[in-house]
Length: 443
Image (spheres, rainbow, N blue to C red):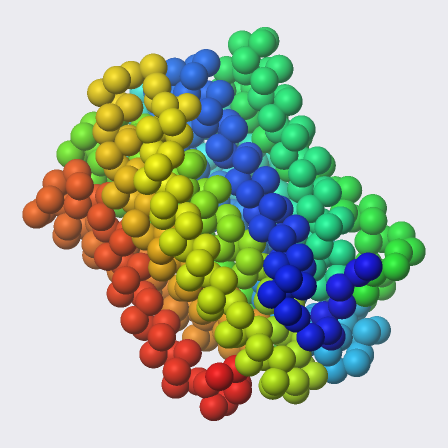
């Protein structure tokens, strides 16, 4: 039986509703993780480091899809909560068409400037060539990668999270199979990994268009629309925190790479890449929960159902604390086997990665609460606060930490920086949540 946004959510019903979104985010993480796994083991250390170095560019461009998905979902779900389904579908259609056109233009620009950007990031020689080759192939599918990010949120709003999961899993499995074939069996190396990612992103972004453009039994359908300038602006404002989060994270990754080159050389970048790939799966749980629960918050906010808002907030905090401690425990226990999957071929690199991941795992205890706080304000259509929280957490605090802590603790300082930044962000998040409790009545 389909769970509706208008229902009262128990723990069981809430977990059942957000579970597809959590799995969706995990499979979305598979793109870069699987590429890194095969490139590291079959192409070598330099191509692996190159993928890590150019990844910020790809993440920044793809993050525009997350921005529209998160910001647009808040508007569309709120409009549905107000009882205006026809207008909600017009808003939905406008946002999808905008991403398709904008993504195409960005893909062309990205392909054109891939090499200059790689040079700015510090690539040279063989690594520069690898960066450009990988990026130019992956960027061909950028419009569909952005659309996949958009549809992840809108499938939840359409009360079809399981269908969104199906399309994401199909894309993820395609990526795995093609990586195994093109990189592992056919030895196409970096190009094979890039082709695998591009094809899987096409599947994840194009097939949902076919579903929504045809008659269906969900709350949303693609159709005729018109230009709503205020809605586009509101979408950008609402989703700016998600965009800021991804852009800031990518810029901070550049800082990490510079510091790692200084304190550990190319091995440091490879170790950090392995740690980040593994952490994608852990953090995906928190992001998936935020994506899955946000439309519920927006709907009940639009319907002025404050009792249910309080119920959702209380249950979410309890669940995220439980998830956080579980993720930290798993990260510490599995640090050795997870590290060996990526860098087991080099003992020194393996030990560096293992130690880094143990320290890095400590931040899982609290990062879910920070992710949810930012997502909560996006769902409540307050993009300004959401953006402030995201900017402080992902850019200001992390940048300061990664630049300052290594002065005192060298390489360990780099691994500790994320825990320090998340702790500072949690303090700021708590202040905003408490100060805004009377306005939005979730407490």
